[in-house]
Length: 447
Image (cartoon, rainbow, N blue to C red; front, side, top):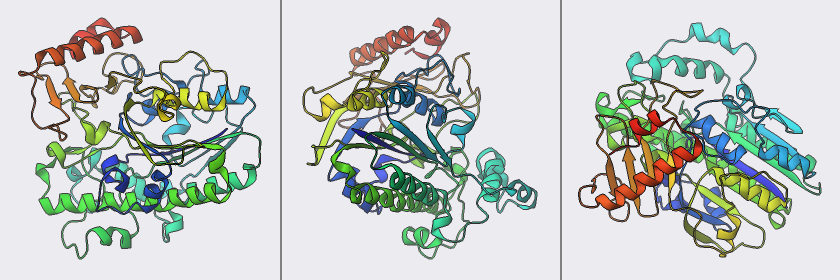
């Protein structure tokens, strides 16, 4: 069986029609979902961008012991296992974070959609259009990204379009092989949110206010409600742009007849706050203010097509990125190492009803490699029904009943202390099993 993974950055699942959003236009992914399985309880494990992808590539969830770290040569990746099984492997991406962290290692083919040569010279010429406190890290990333994208004129100039076009070319060259593995990775929908104007205007016509496109990671009290609405419209436009070009690749896959013999996975690494919980962004930016990973950030879109299972289905069982390794190895019939993750195929075939009781989600906040002291996160534990949020003092633990409080607004920890204690015990067991320092466990896994 062939394998294709399409990874999108910062895509909130509640902005997709197939996850119940009636207002955002995502016709391509919605159509794909009608021939696939939608996971309703997928959550990120290690957070954010690079740690999540390491979960996928290695089959382990190791945020308790490291943060933003590269793939080492000693770590067995899914690519290594598929190469050994005789697969031809390809990586097509515009996600620059993956280059410095060594994810391309082991692939037979590697295509990077990179910014144009010499774009750095533009950085000194770009001026902030609004006060720097309204953009993340005082606009440093915003100005860098403007320089990288200054050549954009037509929709096909956008990185997501270039990546999906290049992935389509790779398939044209390789679709007749006996077995192949293609990982496609786009940094859309990550800010800067500068989709073509006609897409932004579709969600926010005739806007007259300050037009932010690269929000500050912080609290929303610095913005007017109209400005928050405009930022959400810009995000929605990026979602529709990404859907358009992911749809291009999905059409290629279908027209080549690959749905009959190819596992296809659509997934994102995380979402972000767009005004919910009075926050904008995906993580804190000061060490004194750790953020929880509520579902706007932690919940993942996960849509999986397995040959022979074309009827639309929904799976409520918990799933997480570390499972992707095991699923790919299972589908390929390849020999893999023993990993933490569990294959989704038994769930998809109806052979089992669950893989996990809990998924543990956080960014590494200990003293391990790759820690980011100014980007700390609380720990969230998710079950099918409950979410527990714990963190260092003075944070008071929260328990939310997702059945009655899907927005995670009202803690019921006083009413359900036994549920919270059971989830906390499971978290501590997981952290110890992974090898977390006891000081880290005592500081964060507490109520």
